[in-house]
Each structure stands twice: as C-alpha cells, then as structure tokens.
Image 1 (cartoon, rainbow, N blue to C red):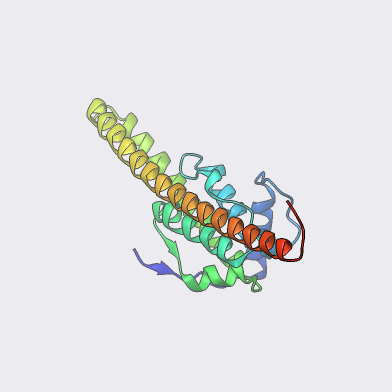
Image 2: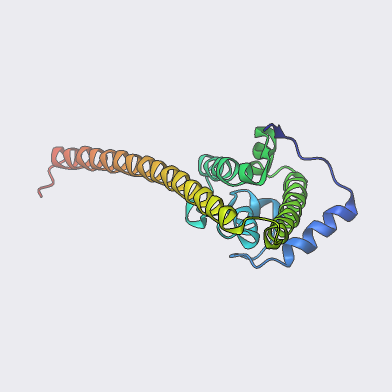
Length: 194
C-alpha cells in the first residue's frame, strides 16, 4: 500500500468539503479549519462518526505541540487510514500540522471519498451475505474470527502505546523529582530550612 499525496481542489470542491464537515457532529466548534484539524483529533472524530469500531478516540488528545500532533496523525495514519485502504504521505501530514493553506481540505476530500467507497463496499458485502447461495454460517465464522484477530492486534497496539506513555510519564516524574531536588538544594544553600 503506497502513501499518497492529496490532490488539489476546485473552489466548489472546497465548499462541498466545508458543507460535509459541518454536517458531522464534532467535539469542538470549527473556527479556523486548518488549525482545528492540525492535531488530528477532529479527523479521528470524522472517521469515528462513520466507522465507530475503527477509531478509538481515547488514542487522540488535543495538542499544541508539534510532537503530539505528529503522534496523533501517525497513529491515525497507521491504525485507521491503513484499514481504509490508503495512507497519507508525510508531506501531507506535515502540511496539515503546519497549517498550510488548503492542506486539510485536500486530505478531507480524500477521506470523504474513501469513506464513501468503503461504505458502498460494506453495503454490497452485507447484501451478498444475505444471499441464499452463500454458506452463511461459514462466512459468519470467518468474519467473527477475522474481527477477533483484528481486535487482538488493535489491543496489542494499544498496549504498546500505553506502555510507551507509561515510560514517558515515568521519565517525566524522574525529571521533575530531579528538578525539585536541585531547587531544594539551592534553597538550603541560601539558608532556607525545611
């Protein structure tokens, strides 16, 4: 699966994207679409709106730092967009994070098309499964097994992410303790008693 650059859009396509986004309930109001989507949280919410089982919203936190924005977008790219059959290029991700003009609109258009395509395929698959020609119990068993495998894989990824977060938080606590210790020593040198 190759990573793609989002194509440029016409003014009408941009307006259609704004209308589409406005129709989706999001956790925070849209003021400046480039800034609003820079941290990846609202994009995760859009995909979650259409495919709730595909996106675990707790993996995405609102961010101001470039590092956290990058983490959110990389998580979205590898855990979610890949399952939709594509991934964004690093160039597009960087453009969104840096709030470059038109970047988020181009990516939203790609997302919109992929969501539409996946939903059409999903409805075709469900119609095929309703057909009496298929061995429904075998298909159901395969589907359940596949879903369980995906769930196990997602849970392992989540565990890995949580372990990484724990490690980072432990490092942060050690750093804070070290700074507190240093400041207390300086205060003691200045004659303050504890």
